[in-house]
Length: 138
Picture 1 (tube, rainbow, N blue to C red):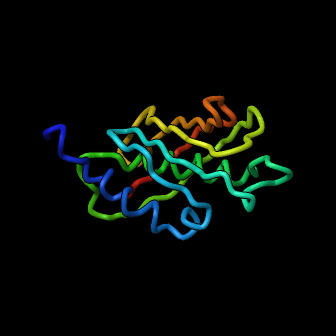
Picture 2: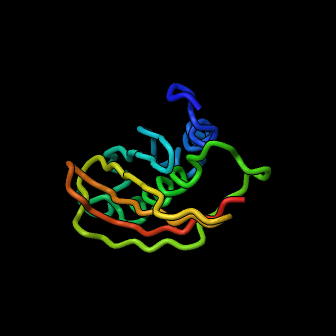
């Protein structure tokens, strides 16, 4: 595969994330997609705050989960059934997020159907939350 050809899974995620109703409601956007890797962003919006300017933990968890899902799907060939679901999500909050947030997700291991992904959410280049996600494809 040439470096200019996008992975089939990355192309799918470029279409899926913006059209996913909850991700769209939160304003989540795709910034980067490559093999086993994804970077997504959550904009600064008053509706996403829990108190003052602090981003709600649920919005951060959704961003991390969505970034992990996107990374899990960044594969060359798509499976016959385009099904997937988060099997496990563990989030550790490290600091308050106040402003726009980016989440970088990296696949740690890939089995036949289960993918383990590490994801970190950062605000102004400071980590604010980390997640370990198990995602099932197919």
